[in-house]
Length: 160
Image 1 (cartoon, rainbow, N blue to C red):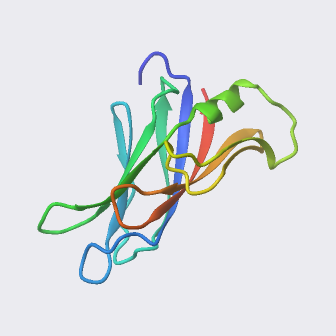
Image 2: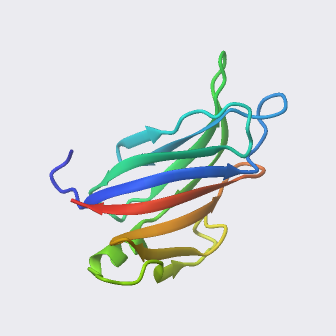
């Protein structure tokens, strides 16, 4: 752990939607998450282009301006794993919401929304909201460099 950790980013990799087929009829997808020098991965889901991972990966955040990068791969036994697209997202809005130091809001209060733009990977509007004393953000990311596929994630900030 570095000395200037602002907090922990809990990334719930929920599911993939309509991911690319890389094997005979399907794919065995997994996700790699990178931020700075950190690199984490989900488990592999066999033969599924609409996988439900529900895996939680934890990144320690030193620089909130660094984007989080995602890569989806198809697990292959004998050859290199095939790329199935990539995406990235910023956590600036989430961190800004945390800095507001909100308290006592009703669960589900939307603090801000991040709109899909040409330079981000959002497939739809991404709400940053308050629930149970914590700031969350829901993301649907359109994968790049691939013919199809989206990833659904939920971010949760943990102050330390």
